[in-house]
Length: 153
Length: 414
Ligand SMILES: [Cu+2]
Image (cartoon, rainbow over all chains, first blue to last red; front, side, top):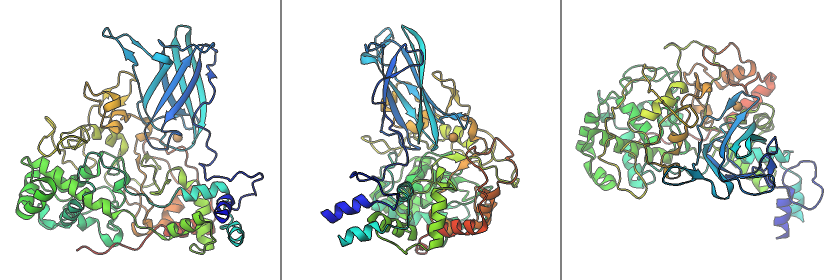
């Protein structure tokens, strides 16, 4: 067992990691594809927490993204319009898919809300590795605002 | 303690990042599920598919089979610049070994399943030149028992029979997946943390360039060494058949392909096998690649872009069995003259290279990437591409590494 642990801890011949944690064979320099704390939109009208399924988003594979939108005090914003998209700014292109925003919970008259402030978008795909920018556009009771999140794949 | 010392003596001085990148390239996993083909992993279907693959009786002249251009000794490619059967096409014959992991098929991705792809060359007038009726007659005469066992019988409708043939062919092709190559033995050693001389110093230097400075893994990543996507390389030569729009046309064509995921020929989990239900009004497109005419993609109201195959009304996004078709952007601007990234598995055996076979050797391919001569005729060259500007010894190392991805040739046709 000790030998096994030692093998795991050795990894490659990189500059010796200090501390006891075993280096893992994680994706090179990937940022977590999950916001752990709510992020304010640029004009601070809303706050957004988001995650992808699967997480982190795999390369060249369809994934979903869910954003939870609240007001600055943390109360869910349930009747906004939220658009989620992604671009590679250095390459001047977006995704090669047309994502779809889930309409939420709709009544017979077609009026929709998003209970808990949850907004789901399907059909996202990162077809290239590199620098992507995830963009959330929110149009809600307090006005229009957006958030951009850089991601490296 | 001895083990510890051996392990830390370090396999070949890779950084953590390099090691992770190398291990992400091996081993080849089992094929991905093929949800629209119920018999994709049925051994009896694979055996039937093998017989069909080498059956010249399926062609209109009785002299051409799938195996005429997909030669086992060349890892199921043909060694020619472009395919020649009944006629001469405009594109290079790709290997069929990696069909089990794809999303889009043919160089332009105009087909969305391996079984629908396999049916294509049977009808192509430049390849096997058959009609669905001819295929059905051959199947009834030669494979009635096998079809009874695998499909419960030969479908009544000729196009449905053609779909069955494609599904058996796919089942066979899925068994041909790339076998472990020398590189995989090296990666296994690396994973185990042992020093390894499975690769030479030159090959290791090539591998270091491949995952590092040369950025080959930008597109050739994962155990199949492909991103399953499409890129415009800005290749120098003017193709003999004129400018090939590649993915720009294929992305629209796949939405109206009569054997696509939305067609009545696609099997569905939990439903009876699709054997006799043709898509209403669908017409088989027997045109060779490069023929005019594509679909008129409909505008997606939500995002005002073209969607390849808008979902039929009532199919919600959560339950759509064809998500790739649903979300594909048929008008993505970078599709102009873009072609599918080929797998690099067994690449040493599949010359010549590129979608039109214009580069004769691996050395010529690397020389192209080293200088990126000329300008694209259509669209723009993939923006991640920059001339590699490597020395001749570095290019030789890269080529030596690429050759370690090639396993022994499969056995000859039965
Ligand atoms: Cu890009």
